[in-house]
Length: 108
Image (cartoon, rainbow, N blue to C red; front, side, top):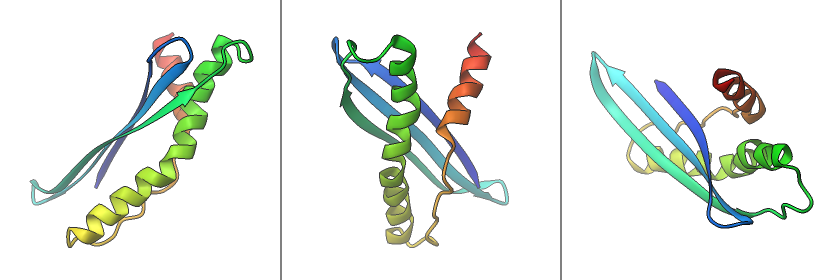
């Protein structure tokens, strides 16, 4: 099984943002793809920039929002697999803070 997760935040206007959890879950059997699930789970949030600094806003968008959206994404994948006749698969929790810090190091 292979799991790929990324988080992308896009500004929609001055105080509204779209946060997208891009997820790709796949499995191979004898070098053939047994199944592939690609899911982009989007959340729209409003952030008052008068209250948060730009660093805090970035952390909220790339850590806090994905952390709160993840249980919904996990339920969708679980139901897709179960309803598709595959063994139900429950994604392990993801440490979005660690993912954020790792991506921040790779950029700088």
